[in-house]
Length: 305
Image (cartoon, rainbow, N blue to C red):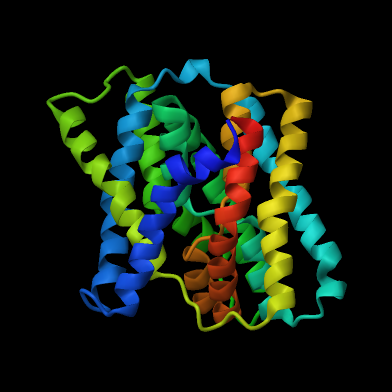
């Protein structure tokens, strides 16, 4: 599959919804208060419903969970070492460095699931859910540790673990896995209810992604370009190399590389604001990565599909 059909047939509608969300927010429709609430509604209800629905019904024994986990741990450790090695060249202060770090390793779950569903269908969503169940806690812990080390913010390990355990996406993944392995599945008509909720996840989530983009801070082009290149180019190549070494399976490889090629997410902005990071910079990084992914993501997908 070449990149042109991917852009117009698969990624085109996804990025069209993101642009629509951006346009609606700039038109102040339906109002500034709407978008944070719809993002919250999607994050705490609709997205978990999708994950529980997929994981509770999946045949988990068919997937290479161990190799996938090993690749995720390795990619995060290598990227952490690489970003720290580049710090003297970046010439930024602590808060800005923490934003570059977040921009280099975080991923947008809404875009990821939309692409997986469009390209790899239901089986891909199951692998994506497993990837998120492993990656989200590790990324959150690493980002908090880096922010604590390089900013004036502070938090405890216990608080980090508490936030990770309370993450609705993690809880949804664990719930789906428990329902699956216990043999309970989705009883009493819950499958149909969760499926209906799941259908609303991606349209609303992608609109919220667009509404969350910030065009005002796109000025520090050197730092923005470096963070974007690390996330959209270096990380996918690193993950592809790790998959070539570990050989987790073709579907697992495709999903892992695709997740590595995703732009950053607005959760990085929230964390930076809470812990004293450079919030305007990470907002600009996420915006640039999302725009650049329109070019880089089809190219990466064309290599793995």
